[in-house]
Image (cartoon, rainbow, N blue to C red; front, side):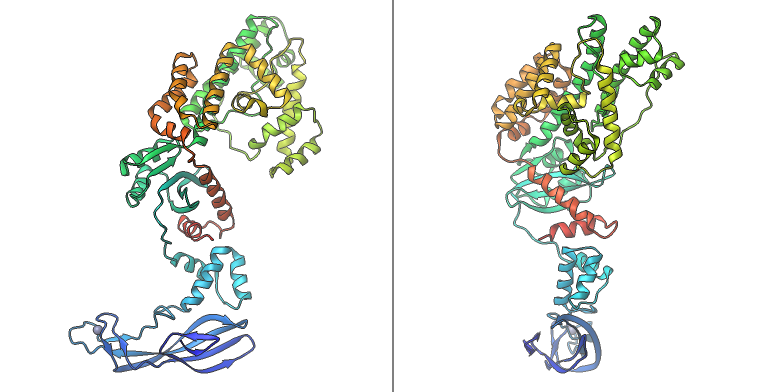
Length: 535
Ligand SMILES: [Zn+2]
């Protein structure tokens, strides 16, 4: 390195002059090497053709911006076999050809960009004496070469949403090193398979239960052991249980008509079922329809007995408006098909319900507690929910002893959680539900058995469990079991090994945070760069 100790320069470059002002230092630099190599034939040449000046920005020094005024030479290539007649000397260690900042400045800007990636980035750079613009920061990030990692032996793969529910990508995690190793722009089997083909060192793929990644792995790296992720197994079983409960609701209701006074009608209220798969959406909708139909028929009966709409509504736990509509229509009104949007509130309903059951009625206090739990949505939503709870409660003070009033998707949590983790009231309610119907008791035992197998890593019990389900008369669990059967080796691995996609979920969460701090609607390519170069 020649030059000033504060401003090191590559060999063959010399500082000729410096001109300092308050914020900036202009440095005149010349190349001193008598020869330069032709970039095409690599033959050195000493015949200077001409000189010109380039101005490039460099890393700041002592808080001042640095501008290099480089005198660059053009040479004749004297190699008669070479196509190139004239070439510009390369300053490869200092600045790329036609770049306007030095390599070292560029890398600093990229680091600032990766760390901030927002407007703050350009402001921070300015503070540090680097003049730059948003688009320049972005270009620097995009220009970073993909980091090379040692190949992942245990691969975790999952999808993530760019925009919730609209576009999905794939995240690939090295499960041993806890690092994101790549992002893919979609979640298609072919895309994932292509990636796996390029990474044949993988020995284990931990993935969800969706067929895409499974088929990608079977196609591309058939020798690899696949492991079904426990979280996804738990989720699938929970969904199956929910369907089962939705179906039973209708049956419980029908039974309450027959066995007068023994059972009150559990109301499907408050929060609707929100399954993920289209086929299941349909199934759940039909189950709900059955419930509604049963209530409608009971309403019809009550009307025949001479009850007024208001009284019918009270007995059935429905709003006056609904019953009025029924009466006006004269026939069973089919529900409009709609899909409720997922709301950030959903995650908090179990907590709210629990507090409500514990006797907390003050809206403001409950809102406060939800805030502490991390709820960031509107108060209105909470109050609407509490209103619904209050109505349910008012109506349940019927003379009939009642079954605990749960919708299928709140009751499901009683079924899948560990009994000891339930509150006292929840435990009582669960026991009541199990006693009310044999089906529910059987389902509960099977569901709990599966979860215990899952938590205790007892994959060897899977076969036995599947046999029990096959013999049961629970179509929803049988459906789940058929899915398991199709993917049995991977499920067994998932239930047995330590490996799982928990950290992949964590990486997805980090990725979401990263996305939030990015420039506007930054695209996939930028997101990928940021994730892969994250500190
Ligand atoms: Zn040449």
